[in-house]
Amino acid sequence: MAKKQSIEHTHLLVLSLLASEDMYGYQMIVELARRSDHTFEMKEGTLYPVLHGLEKDGLVEAYQQEAPTGRMRKYYHLTRKGGAVLKDEKEAWERYAGAVNAVLNCGILPVGG
Figure (cartoon, rainbow, N blue to C red):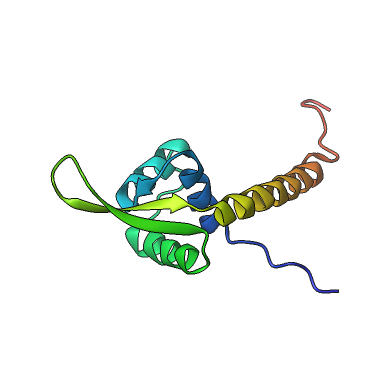
């Protein structure tokens, strides 16, 4: 029986960011670092291929909007399909993390025991 291939964690993180609001690339990099207490420091060379793949798969859509500085920025928006994938993958991640934690915490002796 073949196992379902899971979404990559970078894709999951990006979709999670876009669930709260539309963002442009650099904003996502900064917000991901902030939310993860700098555990995730994504580089542009990693982020943009992820965004392009998500866009190709119909999970995000891009649009141009003028920034307060007058420059045009490319923003990304989570699609309905992207929201459904995010929900499913978040649940799968939570089951996986719970299983890992159950194994890690099994047989732990109390301090001094």
